[in-house]
Length: 279
Image 1 (cartoon, rainbow, N blue to C red):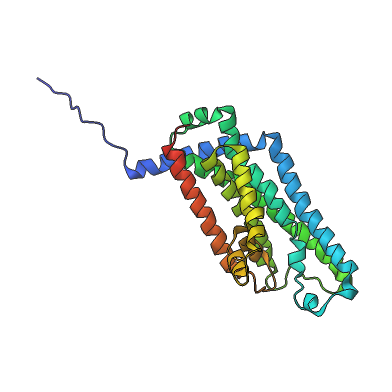
Image 2: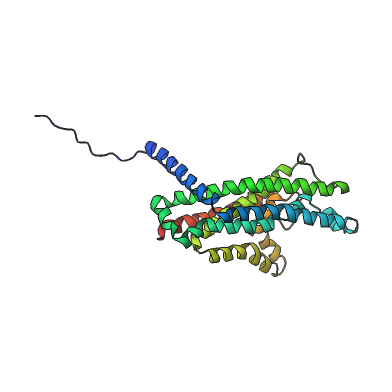
């Protein structure tokens, strides 16, 4: 008599699980890239971010040049060519933020999130794919925008011999800091969309964090207003791209650390809520 070996099925080992997760992540990322590039709002939001970064920075720089001869001593000492070049980032971050919110909330609005979660039960992996793809797109767009704004604004400042060269110390770091500012704001917006799920609520929260709260903090008595302001997300982002050290801002590294901590916190909350709540 012969017997058949009927060994019980073995669990997936970590060596096999890791390549499978990589393959799933790659597939989900391709899907998210397709969603992002085929939505009309993506093009318009990114275009607005580019125009805001380049156009508003050039406008403020030109206005500063027109009043060059009547500047006060304090304005001369504290002049930062890059700060003026990147003035449009404060406006561009709103467009990047709104689009980041839509990356999550648009699927909840249409009900498509049920299909997405059905196809990708690993919800944390789905969130990671959305953040990764959107951050990559924002990184490319924002870096091109920052470099363009820098070159145009330094050309405007050249007749006054106040501009900088891209090879000057700290300039490359400031360019990367400006782009990183927008990337981190975009990631925060995706996280808010995952937590709140409603476009209006998530956008309102984002605007409150970036615009309303900083305005209210300035009404506090000194030195509380300055002490709190430098740790707000918008101020931390400005510090990342500053070329001159300002007393009311963190250092570039400090700004990066603070804004990264905000991003990590909201994405952690988003991952937990996405995993525990039904679609």
